[in-house]
Amino acid sequence: MMFYISSWNTPCNNIQLFARFDLMRWLATLLLAIALAATLTACDRQNLHRYQSFAFGTLIEIKIRNSDSSLADQASARLFNDFDSMHKDWHAWEAGKLTQTSDLLVKAEWFTADDSVLELIKLAQQYSQLSNGLFNPVIGKLIHAWGFQGAEQPEMPPSQEKIDKLLADLPGANDIEIDGSMMRGHNDQISLDLGAIAKGYAVAAGIQKLRAKGIQNALINAGGDLCGIGSQGERNWRIGIRNPSAEGIMASIELNNDECVFTSGDYERFFSHDGKRYHHIIDPRNGYPADKAVSVTVLHNNGAIADAASTALFIAGPNGWQEIAAKMGVSDIMMIDRQGRIIMTPSMQKRIKLEASDSNRAVLIREPLPADFSAGSSRPGKRGHE
Image (cartoon, rainbow, N blue to C red):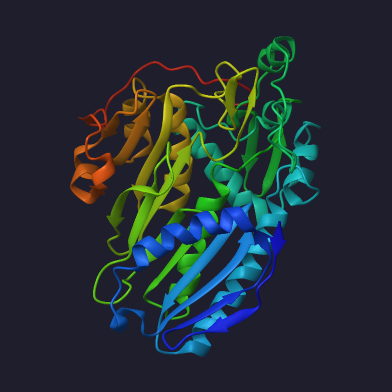
C-alpha cells in the first residue's frame, strides 16, 4: 500500500513529507521515533522541524532544530533533491551513472569516470581492501543471482552450479584501476553494487551540507541508519537500535556531536524457501548469505565507514570481526550473534543503554585487535590490477 501526505504543522513542529513511501516501513520507523520522542520536553520540541521523504529504498527523515523555519525548509528541500539524484545515479540495476560505469568497466578500456560516482567508487575500493574483501562493491552479479536486485521478493536461492560459476571468477575491488579521473576494469564479471556504502556516504554528506548552511543541530535518519550534529535541545540526540528478533528497540544511544550509527541485520530483506531463511547480505567467500551474526551496529564519525564496516563485520561474524574492525578503524561496535548473545567493545558498552527486556542477554566484552595487528589474508575474488 502506498500513500502520500503533503504537509502538516503543529505548534512546535513543521513536518513535511515530500514523497510517497511504503506504509509498513514508515510505520516501523515511526514507532521507533515515537518511543524516543516521548522523552522530549515541550521546550526541546520548540523550533524542531521534521521532514520526510523516500530514497535509497527507505524512509528518510530530517530533523532540524533552528529558529529560522524558512532556512530549515529550504535546506531540507534541497537535501531531498540531492538524495533523489544520488539514488538515481548510484542505483545498482536501474539505468543510471553506476550501471553505465559497470558497462564500461567490463570492456577493459580506459574511460573518464563520471564525477557523480568516482569519489564513491574510490572510497568503496579503499574500504574493501581494509575489510579483506568482505565488503565487496563489485559483486552485483552474485547479488542479482540471489534476486536481491529488484523490487520483487526472491522465491528461491540460485543453484549451487550457478553460485560456483560466479565464484570461479569473482571480481574484487582491486580489479578496478583508477588514475585520476580515468578508470578501467580488469575483470569482465565486474558489476558495481554500492548498497553497503551509498546510504552512509549520502547521509554524512547531507549533514555536512546542512552545516555549511549554518545549521548546527540536525539529524538525518535513513531507515534507522543516521548521522547527527549538535543536539535536539536540552539533551543530545537519542536514537534507538532495533531489536533484530522482535518488535521495538533493544537499546538506545545518545550521540555526541557529529556521529553516525549504522546497523546491518538479517531482518532487513529476506525470503524463505523449504523452511530455510535467506537474507540479502552475501558472503563473497562462499556466495551464500552470511550466517554467523544477526545484526551489527557501528558508531563512528564517518557515515560511509560506519555503513561499510557494519556489513563487513556482519559477514566476519563473532570469530573474525576483531581484525576487520582494527583495520577499518572502528572501535564502537555491538554484534548480536546467532545464539542471541551481545558482543560489544568496551567503548560501546560505555555508550549504549540496553532496554529492560534485553538486559538479561549474555553480554561479552571484546576489544578489537591492536591497530598494528598484521595477518596474512586473502581477498575474496581474484586479483586484477595491483
